[in-house]
Structure formats: C-alpha cells, structure tokens
Length: 141
Image 1 (cartoon, one colour):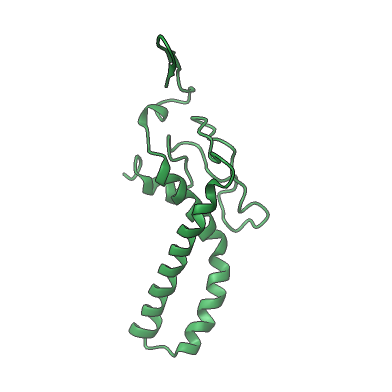
Image 2: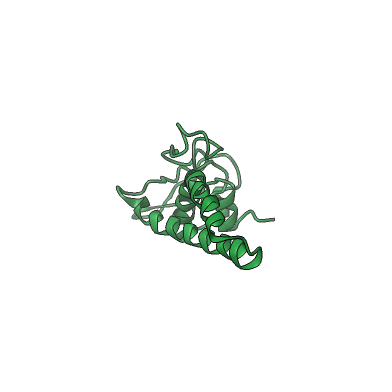
C-alpha cells in the first residue's frame, strides 16, 4: 500500500530509490552500539547513502523539527487536555527525550535523504544490478 512513497522508505528503514535494501545496519534503534551505523550503499541498487562529507548535517534540523513536534504535542496532551500539572509533565518529558534520541536520529537521517532521492521503480523490479546502456557519448542508467 505505501510502497513507492517516501513515507514507506522513512518508516521501514529502506533505501529511498529502490525501497528494497536496508538503510541502517540494525533494524532496531535501541541496539546502542549500532544505532548510528549505516550501510555505505544500498545492497539492491547500489545508491551511495553518504553522498559527500557532511551530507547528513542537515538531518539535525529535521531532528530538531521532530523534537519540537513531540514536545508541543505532548504538552497539549498532558497540560491542555489531561490537565496534568506542569511539574509532572517535565518529569515525563526529560526522560522521554533522552529515550527517543536514537529513534529521532535515525528517523531524521532517513527523512533527510528522502528530500534528495526519489523512488524509481526500475531499480526495484528485480535483484539484478541496474543495466548500463551506452549512447554515443555517455552512459545512461
């Protein structure tokens, strides 16, 4: 149902181009020794994930947006809807932010690369590598 959308790639740890290969080495964000380990390239379509040094620096801004959305939505839930005291909200919020750090780190990186790479179904069709055909001057994928 979602396959072929950017949301599928972001939510299911998949390559943004073929949506077949995994983006991070570990499926779980909470294997703390491996939570930040990414594959160098997609095992299916050979898309290089780290395009240039510092490419994922922009993911910090995406991560910041996720944190702000979480803080505002939890504030509205706890303080405005459930009418829980602000002290209890802070007791909930601070450990939650620490515990969600690996999850938001990975989510932000997958979101960031999806800004720059689109799904291309020709790379997802079978498990063979992309066929390179040549024209008179340059190769075309």
